[in-house]
Length: 424
Image (tube, rainbow, N blue to C red; front, top):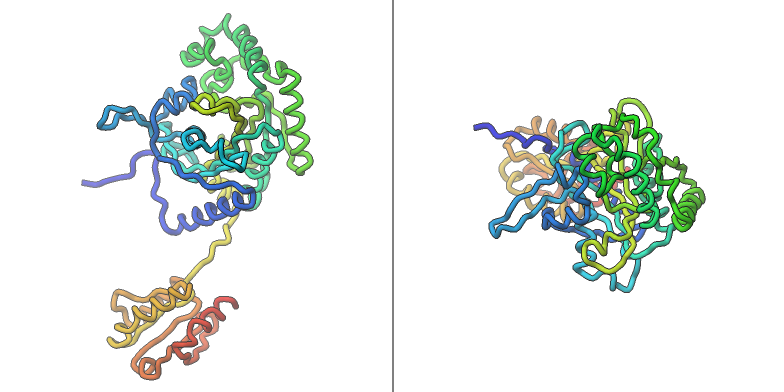
């Protein structure tokens, strides 16, 4: 029997995983600079968490979740996104009572959505996300957007485009909802069944429909910016001012609504301009979600966040021909000559690794020539050769792979010698 990958998943092999490790390290470093702390939540949660948090009118909840009953008959779902789980943990662990507020968290981990696999969009994918809860200050909106932009730019991406919009507060959204219903209702029978279902409950979702996006009523649908009250306008203007002060360019797009029900006020997407990236140009998105904490059972707590796909980031890097500065090769490769040297090798390898060096040796009984070829393939900076003579004098023959020069070095000095070659 042959076993194959489940559709929409991938094996990340060692050469590729090095890129993931570099990107994840960049995310950890950046979040530390912004004073965001890592959180790790379960891969599966109660199904109702996502129905209430993400929104039961979204495509994610209606069509894309991996849901199953456990042996106790409880309905569980593999997490399709990270915000709902993070907010659940915020409420359950009473983080709103922590001394330092707002609570600033980030996560990196796999998410699951049952959708048609395509380039940069998998059924199992990895998200890096940030959530800041406890502050309604527009400055933290700008901070979260700035963190996302910094992440991409520090990895070398060019031609980034920040799109922002305001979805308004509850009053603004209520007025906009009424306008949308009045706009679409006379001809709602011309739209897909999903849009018909969403008309009364959440007509904003109609604007995000992929099936009817070219319908003529979409072109002149009421824009949320026309229905913002004074408070929402002031808030949005403050966010834009902070972005300008931070030298972050942006474009306002009144049609940007995002794909999740919990967003209000600030919404944003980061896109990439240029050929070769396919039809889907969005790299990441996020926004403010005041009200979500209460929806999940916590106290009134404002929040804002974003999430991005590591897979789409890697696509963008490849499209722009950006090579990550990965550290290649071993510090040293140990070549043994004779049975005594082979017996002595594990001790020396263990010692060098304890000194923080990347070293390896042959485990297939290759001849010296084969061992040297292995050292070259693994881009070792130096080769350490030991035989009977070296063992007798407690020394190692060190050979530079760059110059071919050789020197006899005492075992006690070998670590410093290798580190010298490494620094050069």
